[in-house]
Length: 202
Ligand code: HEC
Ligand code: HEC
Image (cartoon, rainbow, N blue to C red; front, side):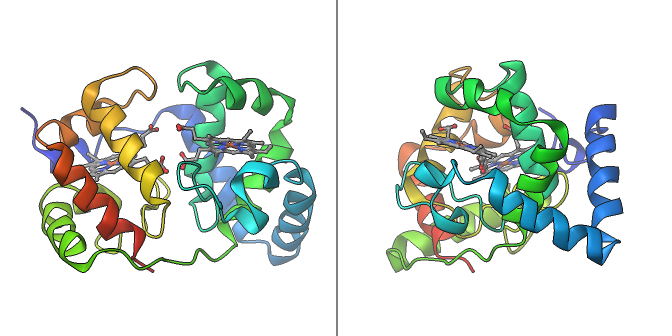
């Protein structure tokens, strides 16, 4: 089995490099960035129904988008559009967004703060130990991710549990070999502990 630190350095596909370059150009231009964020709020008026006001979901199985890394959001939108990630509703909906609207939506959500929620301390402590051993190489010590990896800190608890379980079980709903490897040894109770740890992180 490959070590996860090697897996963390897998080369980035060209379309993701382009998305990252688009984001970098925007972030380096404060006026354009402000305009993109304002436009993103308008573009996402419909998303509020599920992902909540300002990207803070009220449903524990629907992800927060607030605070999520823009490059990751763009990549997931691409995956839904290409049918590489399965969710009937998202696969259909996301096709209506044009490229510049996708970038605006991603930038808008990235600019929003995400509030953590308290969870069961004993479970969070167990989750922290697992996270430190198995997940930090990619998701970072504070679980805030990077342009390559999603933020997990403050994410909805049931969504975390579901997502981690789906990678582990190879359901085909989400396909990411590195996540399948990283989660292969986890028991259901470990996944619940990890979700408790991540949900309460700022
Ligand atoms: C009818 C409810 C609904 C609406 C409306 C909706 N979404 Fe979603 N979205 C979901 C669900 C449910 C998921 C999680 C799917 C899963 O379990 O993997 C999701 C996942 C996502 C993800 C992946 C997040 C992650 O952490 O991986 C992104 C990005 C996203 N949606 C963007 C949008 C945008 C942008 C809009 C508006 C144009 C939108 N969604 C509207 C239900 C919705
Ligand atoms: C080798 C790098 C790597 C390691 C180690 C890793 N991950 Fe991931 N993780 C990723 C990548 C890449 C994605 C995005 C996958 C995709 O596009 O579906 C991801 C996605 C996720 C998601 C989905 C986030 C969202 O918003 O939908 C969760 C939850 C997650 N990882 C949890 C974990 C946990 C818990 C561990 C440790 C047990 C872990 N990861 C270890 C690379 C890694």
